[in-house]
Image 1 (cartoon, helix red, strand yellow):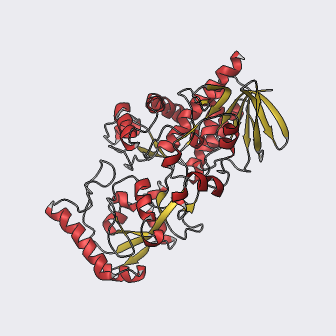
Image 2 (spheres, helix red, strand yellow):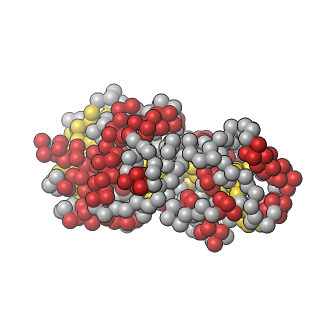
Image 3 (cartoon, rainbow, N blue to C red):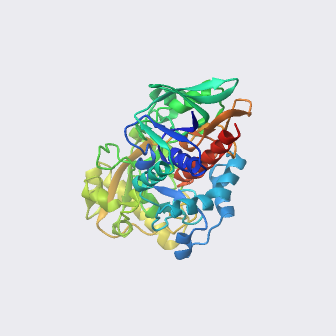
Length: 450
């Protein structure tokens, strides 16, 4: 019998496995895919931490209280305050825990929902590999290509799992199997508004864990707030890597097929994603110039504009008229849109769509005026579902009456409650690490007391 079975080997599951194994628990990790990483390795690799050494080095003043305010305001106060408080209270401890394992973070960036720059980039493949190695060093067993089909439930509590290979008894189970962005059935049930969006996320994100827990009586929350992510190329293929770009947060504007802006580009990219889907064909174009291109950063996929140019996903022209012809949009309209945007900036008059910053509360827009000019055709993709099982601050899964289901824990994308009605960049990776660690420690404690 295992002390703790962890279902899923993305960031949340591996963080749980390490945390539990470090306490001496006997841990088994089940991963249905042949490789680790799940949606974690497909993300931009940004973690939202506040009060870090990287921020101090860059002169960014940030703390847990400001982070808390951003989470609640961006989530329109639909978040579970207890989970928000836990995230904020545990985020620095988790950050230091990861750094203690050798995880390195690069230059901090500003992004959606952030009052100050707090997106900490890291190599996600190195991150998950480091965590798996640490778990194995602490005695955990790793079972790749092992699909968990059901939870074993006795007397209302979870006592193990059923895999394709048979039953696996455990004193506690941590579900960290991701969301359901790859499940057409669940998306049709919970997010019909995403019908026109592309599908992304890890290949294993089919909602298995949520359905298992649901059958065991678990509650589900935040399903009305499923949104797509703006910035993905309509025909990404393999060149883009599935992340898209957000040139709008470095100074680009977004225009529709008529060559007109349709939204304040500093808003969260989930909001922009909804607005993009409402445009003709569900397509928009990020328009920018050489000044924005100069901010390309190869360490952050969503800001690696130069790579998109190299792989043919960016259009380039010496004039806006030429760029419009390549996009097959009205040249006069695009030129008028850019001129209106630039004039408002230069004269200090209000932006017609309300834009005042580059992203969140950070940065000031600059004119799009320096050739060459660039365009990135963009649409919306469901990369993650940001909703799921109800949990408490100890990562214990709660049933439909709000009562703890003994022996069952959850962390990562499979859980709801933290984000509410909006999304702060970096809090998906952040919550995976934070609540994964909490789930592992809590599950281990319950296993030892059994």
